Length: 110
Length: 113
Image 1 (cartoon, helix red, strand yellow):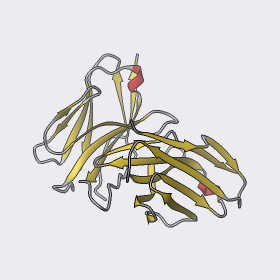
Image 2 (image 1 turned 180 degrees about the vertical axis):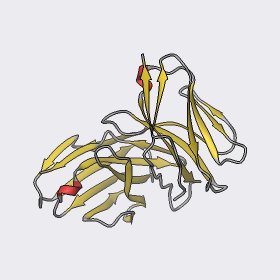
Image 3 (image 1 turned 90 degrees about the vertical axis):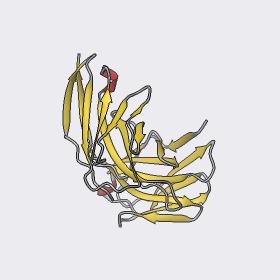
Image 4 (image 1 turned 45 degrees about the vertical axis):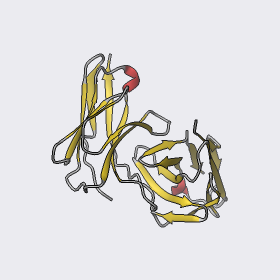
């Protein structure tokens, strides 16, 4: 069966510090991969999606970036965090029409 | 991205059926209708999806209007564990560009014991 791993579960980072969130998928090959962000009390915002290694599409201009160095690995990064980067970050994968989400990382920028 | 419209919130009594509506008047012929739900502090969970015909699974039923401009998620007997935010999402059929799942604000369902 397929599983998705996302870590860490919670993270507190100072403004201006770098960020690296990692997501890996097991049990499937060539999945579509996604990063979402959910601000407090808001809906989910699609940040990046990827249909293959090295192929990244950005949905919202921001100081975040994403990379896919391996088929089942998706990384969300920032060189310098802003206060507005706080939120609940979710990784997801899909095959055909169904999407599966990780448990999320709650990021607080202080 | 095709837009969906849902009520912000709904309430239901426990053990009673719940009908969650969704309007998607700009749906294209190749868009699937998906429903996901999100419990507090968790990632969204797949509930059901359909294209044209009504669909049933162990969690819920999906009723799709004949013109596909609206749909209804039906929970046959609401339990306290069904309290969540329910998202109705449109996504094109799978292809090389991938499915891009755009979430709105959803419907927050409260189940009253």
